[in-house]
Every structure is written in C-alpha cells, then in structure tokens.
Length: 328
Image 1 (cartoon, one colour):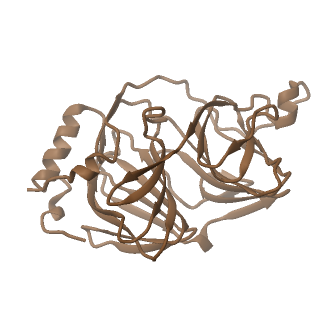
Image 2 (tube, rainbow, N blue to C red):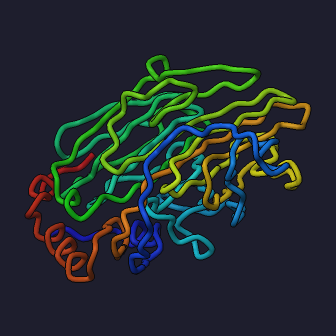
C-alpha cells in the first residue's frame, strides 16, 4: 500500500476547470499584405499577437528543499490549455524531487545549467546536462525521482503538458535530446533552438501527442524577430534573461522571470532594444478543450478518475504495479 508524501501533494494547485469551446483553424505561414495597419507593418503580421496577461514568477520552496519560480499553475494563472504548469527551478544537493508518481500528462525538463538525474520504477535512468531535454509521457502511471547531479546550483525549466482523454492511460515513454542534437537556426541577430515545433524552416524531431511548440530564442542587442504561431493555439513567453519588448513596439519592456500570455493572432513579434542579449522561450499548443481535474501529481478529466488514480497508486495496480517495492 503506497501513500503520497504530503510535500508532493503541496507541490501543485488543485484545479477543476470546464472546457471552453474554441474554433479550430489550420496552421498557415503568415504573409505580409499591402494593406496593413501601422502595427502590422512593424510586426510583419496582419493580426499580431499582443500580451493579454503578465505574471511575475516569484521564488517559492517546493519538493525537498528545492527553489522554483512557478508562473503557470499558480492562483493568477492556474493553467493555459493545454499547459498545466511551468517552473523555473534551481536546486542544489541534497535538495531535489525524490520519489513521486504521475498520471495523465507529460513533463518536459529543459536544463539551463548543471545536470539532473532521473530514475523510475521501470528501470529507466539517465542524466541530462545543460541544454539537454527530457520529454516524459507519464500516461497511465510512472513513479520516479529527479535529483541534482552536480554540486552547486542546477537550473532548468519544467513544463507540464496535458494529455487528451484518449491518451491519458497510454503506456509511459521518453524522448531525450542532447543539446548537440537539438536543431538550431540563426537569422539577423536571432538564434533559436527548436525543442519542439518549427522555427526559421527548421523542425524538431520530437513527437508531440498534444500538438505544441517549444522554442528557445536568444536575440542580440537591437535584434528583432517575428515568429508565426498557429492561430488556433494558446501560447506564452517566459523570459529567462535580459529584457524585451513583446507584441508591439509601444509595449513596455519586460524583465526576466515574467510569463507573458499571448492573445489571438498570427504570430509574435519581439524586439531587443537593450544593450544585452535577450533570452526567452516561446511555448504554444493546441487547446484540448476538455475538463481538467488536478490533484497533486494526477491530472484527469473527472473527480472519479482522480479517486481511481489514488486507489491505483495506493494499491499498486493499473499501471503502478512496480511501485510496490521500488525505491530510487
């Protein structure tokens, strides 16, 4: 019989949201038209995306002594369909995220500095270093640990992406990319790492069950970039370092550790008007438009499914059989 540590129940907001229908639209590349507003001429889009919400991710303690800046998954921004959580974490040994379960979604861990070691009850073990990515599908159930692999500060981002009801109980799986294997492109003072999706004609090899993009941009001083985003998708920016102008040239500069939710439109325009590099991630995805019921490390569609997940974990069944004797 397994019990979930109270420290991990406290990690996450308990949320229940209803689906909000949205019309679907096909992804098409933007084109610059002759009849544009002044703002669209500056951005390169007929319908540029503007900033509709800004959230500062303040530091908070999580896990076992870890420090995180949570932007999505807090009261001001409980979720952004299909995204459930975004943490910028900083962990020094012996702190970390010891043994804990998941069901019903995917986690994307992107290391910025240092290294993290992951191991699970299925025998999978690996270490990702600076620039590496682990894309984990929890599916019907996984129990794992995530602990720092180096002394000093180990920093990164962890994103939770919801799975559709038809995919919530699939078998767990992993996609891992080393930094050297992540596609890159560069143009006019802008560099991008294409972790998922497409940018500057370069496509990531990562398969996304929930259609999504995850792009790591660095803009040199005085550079600008205009990135298409499928019009039916929700999208946001998280600033890692520096400051930038997002959405429109008349917008105020925004500093690091801010999450910027984007409104509707064809794409994002960004300008670096400072004397230092600007680094941010642009993340977008197709909304699932399904009910979300989340409690601790389980994300399902109904309260009954959450109760079943707790029972399955507690009695080590329906995907959690290997949790009975496993310890990291």
